[in-house]
Length: 168
Image (cartoon, rainbow, N blue to C red; front, side):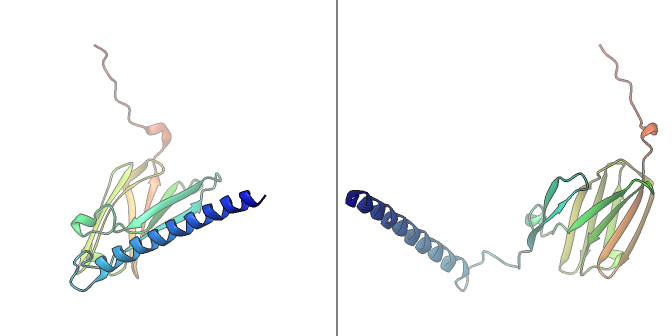
């Protein structure tokens, strides 16, 4: 019994040493990053995630912020999309704080929205894949207090455009 206790204590001591080493490495790394004159971060970084449960019970985790377009100085806005089958609509809600209506450029196809907005130091860019096919000609958009709402009519499933592929 005594030998087993000694071995257990040795394992715990080794874990303590590993944790101490990790703490020192993290502390040294942070000192180098945030010391005066270090130019690692020239502007604040905004980054986050959202999580929700879809109506079918599947969890959805989505990232947003300074990630995809970081090298260009753009931020991906937070957005969500809702399908209303009873109305036959797809609605996108996109947060764009700090920009004016005139700064927003939207382009849509039947399966994707491309967004860009630039105002002084606020720069947003996103490509949003739709959950369903839409009629881009039916779009309407409304922007108020930093929130953009874009609505599309869902494309009738019977009117899909198919292309004949020739077999050689």
